Length: 89
Image (tube, rainbow, N blue to C red):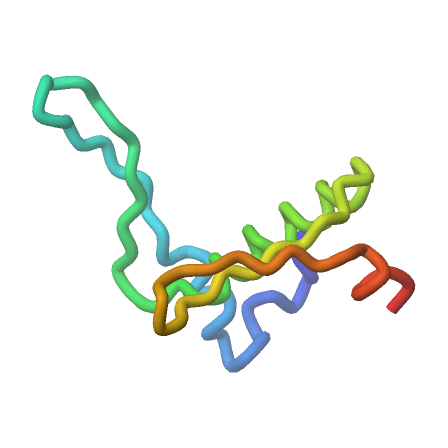
């Protein structure tokens, strides 16, 4: 659900970015259709909405684990946070 004034948030930039991803069908090398999303303009707010929605669903299901992926001198690494690190805040 979006707020009634969604078109005015960030001078309209928020709403424009929500509309940026466009679903297209492309064919892979064997001719099978694959859905992909392309963007015509910045889409950072659209991605943030997806992550926030997934976090809300996971929290409602009791799946409260949070992971962070970083990249250091030895390559990528994963940090798993305990629920006590972020619960009740």
